[in-house]
Image (tube, rainbow, N blue to C red; front, side, top):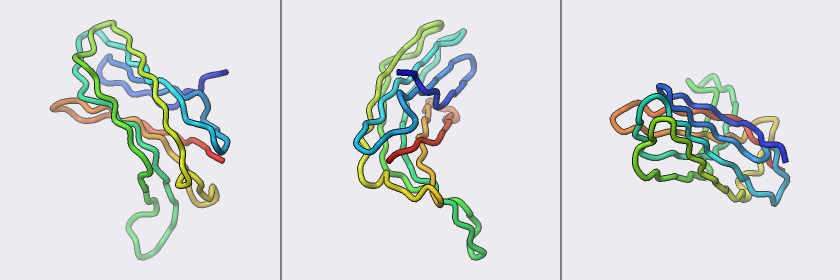
Length: 134
């Protein structure tokens, strides 16, 4: 099965990639993937990584300052043990089981997967991409 690249986050020379087995899921399938952490030129501390599935709805309203609304569906936190060492590579598999909230109207909404890398005392870095279900 061909892996589907989803997000790439760079923090200094540290690289965090989220790769899913399939960005297009049929009903009943599970979202499987792997987070790849490639250490850069120096050790880097990562507090944890969060995977979040949410629905992004596009709805223009003249009464609102926002044309896009994000509604979280599920969140998975991945705790890391220790620093990511220079030149070290870690692979962290994950699995997210869809439920009825993943059923959306693709004309109005998008199903998104967001990866956030939480850095102690620093700015959290994130990237997101669309997935399809059903």
